[in-house]
Length: 162
Image (cartoon, rainbow, N blue to C red; front, side):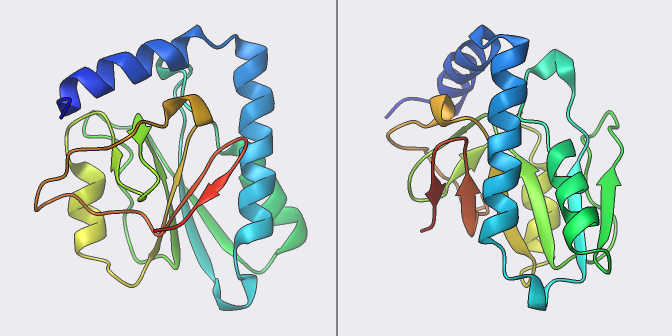
């Protein structure tokens, strides 16, 4: 099996090869697909991360706009970026998580710090949603006991559930 480090490097290269326009369009598709997939009757509070252009990651800003315009009673919190990642602070019904690579079983790898895994392990009732580009999908993610799988992964072309 390929190591997490090797998967991370290869996936980041594929992600970085997308043009800014391709990333923007794919991010909008991801956000719309996610807004359509969630059961909004059960959601009161959502956490999303602040995307960094330098990481070329999927940007959830379109999802924030979608939620605020169609579900104004839902509290959307954007975690500010910090040196230890944009780890959520508080309790959320849905946590939108960035990913570097993922598999169809909804396992993910991020940047390698384990910040989201730590948070999500302590908040098992939160719906865990990873978002990324379809080109970040790999055959299999090696998992460890501390890794927390996603309940759903949404890409620009598909929705995956375990």
